[in-house]
Amino acid sequence: MNHDHTHLPHEHHHDHEACSCKELLSSMPPTSTIQTVSDAMKQLGDPSRLRIFWLLCHCEECVTNIAALVEMTAPAVSHHLRLLKDSGLIVSRREGKEMYYKAADTDLAQKLHHTIEEVAQISCPS
Image (cartoon, rainbow, N blue to C red; front, side, top):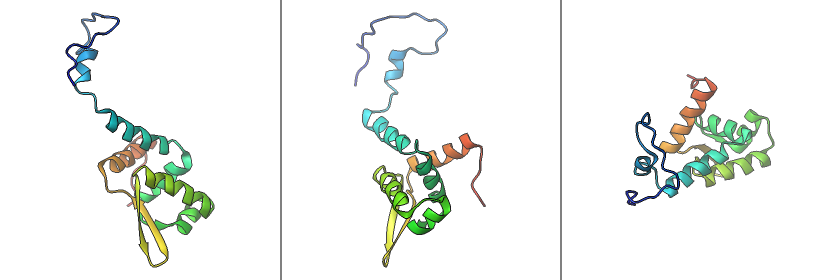
């Protein structure tokens, strides 16, 4: 998209700015990328899903064990897992009758994992 001809309703001339808003438009991610990140961050806006996601960044686990670890019911955990999976933050695999969940091996999931730890000032368990 060519933003050279973008007209801003207010033209502010700030000499102290390194670049103008018009110049930033050429670096702005596509709407689809912004939507993907926004959807993932919405999912992590829920404290229960954030805890489950962080846990699954460090291990692969079944619903029953996740429920015990986060002190929730299995149906409640299943609901959160479905939302996390729909947003692409976690993946699952079946082994017999059991489903196992873990964080997706994607750049987005890894960056969100590291952001959580940086903001919370925690580090990955050894």
